[in-house]
Length: 229
Image 1 (cartoon, one colour):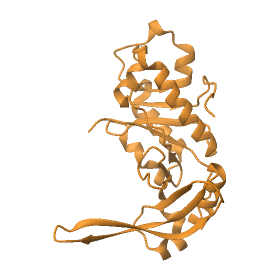
Image 2 (image 1 turned 90 degrees about the vertical axis):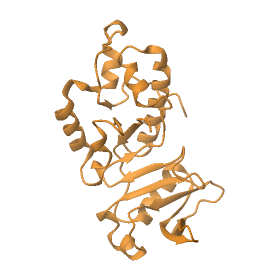
Image 3 (image 1 turned 45 degrees about the vertical axis):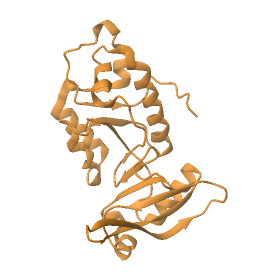
């Protein structure tokens, strides 16, 4: 398994009910949203796991693609309806593309955007260590993240290594606000937690330090001109 770059960003989605969240996402992404949960059963002699999506409702937009908003907490329909805001972990994805390129994970206090960086963590980090060959790829990835972050009502994000020292931040937004996540990353990693846009603007290429072992990144996208519609 490799180390992936995981962006985590703020959102302004309603969190009191899954129906309200589905309606907001339908508006933001101009799509039909089916919302519900999955139950698991085991069949056959080898007890293969079978997953069945149970639809609780739908926000319909005629003529648009269908996306799924799936509660992943393992709760019952009644628990989701009555206590949705107590434990939010939902996957939002295009129909038939669970955990694929379109998959967004929404937690109570933040979300994990869908764009993936193909070069994974080491190449992403090494761009800031002077390996400039992938700089354009990193900035394209950042532009895609920025677009989605802005759609969801945010202004900034952090990037963490999902199998590295910063991986603890992966689930923190289930209970902690993103500002608290950022404060802990700063406290834990100091100079190895950097502001990407400031670094891009202020650090000449010859000053990039190949010996730095950056553990996490903050990005307000201030150096980017969003050119992807």
